[in-house]
Every structure is written in structure tokens, then in C-alpha cells.
Length: 143
Image 1: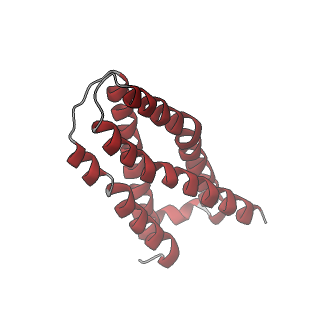
Image 2: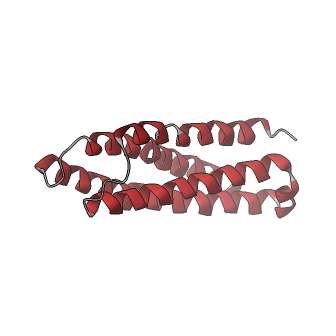
Image 3: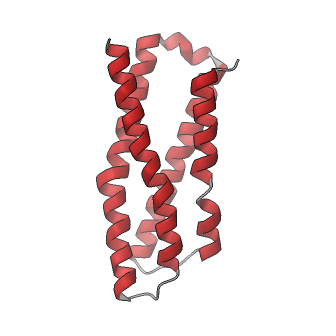
């Protein structure tokens, strides 16, 4: 019963986190098209900051917490299984991507434009690729 509760909360958390990871880079694409200091640029700053602080950060933390609780439920010897090692590596990379997105938000907040619109279009694909690998590992558990 406890396993199913943790699994449900893990899936809910991960879904919320991924929604933000998919949406935020699109905001970056649109934000990069706006002039620095414009009303629309300032609106994007608020949207990006709130998405990160209110949705993405708590969702990432709860994804990790419930994921680790799930590992505790199945036994820490599961950490020796290749599928779980790969999944955790991909989740670490997703967390790194999250951190990178946080840096971009800070750059935009300071009116620093270090990346092009095309860069943001490409970086938008990274969470999708990581998600595909994570789901395949969790569902099929290949060894």
C-alpha cells in the first residue's frame, strides 16, 4: 500500500516537473524575441520566475523524495540493477538541465542575452529525450 502511495506521488510530481521542463524553454524562445526592457520582456521574466519557483522547484524536489522512497520500498539492492542506474543518471541529467534553466532565468532577469532563439529551440528537445529514456528504463527495466 505504501509503495502505491509513493508511486502515485512520484508520478504526479514527475508530471508537474516535466510540464515545466517542456514549457519553460518555449518561454525562453519567445522571451529572446522581445526587446530588453519592453513590457513583454518584463512579463516573461515574471512568468519564468513563477513557473520555476512555484511549480518546477517543488515538483523536482518531490520527484526525488518519492523516487528515493520508492527505492527504499523495493530495497536498496535495486541500485545494483543497470536499468535503475541508467534511470538515475538520466534524472541527474534532467536535474542539471533544470539548474541550467534556472541560470537562464537569472540571466534574463538581469537582461543578459547569452543565447540565441535557435539555441532555445534546440535545448527545448533535451528534456524530451531524457524523459523517453527515463520512461523506457522504468517500464521495461532492461538489464
